[in-house]
Image 1 (cartoon, rainbow, N blue to C red):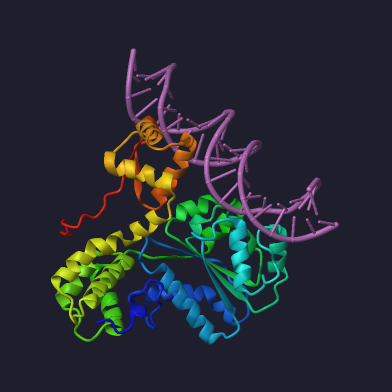
Image 2 (cartoon, rainbow, N blue to C red):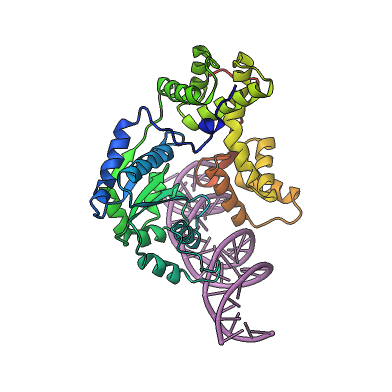
Amino acid sequence: MTEDARVLREGFVPKDVIHRDHEVNALSRVLDPLARGEPTEPALVSGPSGVGKTTITKFVVSHLREEVLDVVTVHLNCWQAYSRFKATYEVLRELGESVDIRRQSTPHDELLNRLNTYEGPPVIVVLDEADQLEDARLIYDLYRLPRFAMILVTNDEEQLLSGLDDRVRSRLHTAETVHFDSYHTRELVDILAARIDHGLVHDAVSDEKLHRMADAAGGDARVGLSILRSAARQADQESVERLSDDHVEAAIPEGRNEVRTKNLNTLRSQQRDLYEILVDAGELAPKELYDCYCERVEDPRTKRTMRSWLQKLAHYDLVAASGEGPSRTYAATAEYADSDSNP
DNA sequence: CATCCACCGGAACTTAGGGTTC
DNA sequence: GAACCCTAAGTTCCGGTGGATG
């Protein structure tokens, strides 16, 4: 049933984007000066997850490269490159400037120096998930370099801005901000339909099933695609050419949980223990949670470390905290049950 | 309504690790 | 191999906060 699996994959950038004309234009305008060889203001792209921030940014940047041949782009995911060193190193690596830099043993001053003396074509640096940067000095570093255009992508504008020093923050406030809102179900239908057109055999998905999947995605295109991918995978395994209701219904929880499962795999054993305690016990006060944890593991870390882990778990959306101060409790966020598939 | 106390989370520090340079 | 250059994870310390409690 699948003809071109790439089209369904995360990170695929379609030739045409739909329902984001305004955002595409706004972002293009910010980058316009590059075509005339002039410096640009930084752009801030914000909005919840799965609303096309990354896809649209990649789309705009690649179009610009078609128009202006002499421009280099670096797309950096700050989940992976979260320290100042890692991020700076990655930028240099993408520019092909890091060949003779020995990892770990080069002071960041020297990395910065490399950026300063960079002489190639103008560079667009996209800092995806920029709020994940532990050390926002990279933003400041890049900000001062005229040859570097910067696009900051974030789903947590507050968090990003709070980590910056005043000078950069005030400039970003006045910089172009492109805000993305959640998709409506009918927009998701169009988006999924376009991918189905290009990726699956003709007539593989009925209108009704398409709507069901779009509806179940809750405005998040990433979840929608994940559901579609999961359903198509199942159909392929059975060598059938049309999605059945069963495929779709089974794919909905699987697709929704895909991100969660991926995140769980990045945790280490004691962090996962913490999560499992919360899954088993439901809601717990910090003290109870810490006691359970100490009982469960052989070599417990301190309470402060647990708090750090909980923050991380909350970032991954695996755990939610509620209440402030003494009445704070933690709970695992609801998993999507297989049986309950009502919207 | 004031006081208390558990909790939060920033900052500085420690420890363990891995590489380069002389 | 000692002296550096770092990172990463965890610990210690602690001021601030705000719901609970008398």
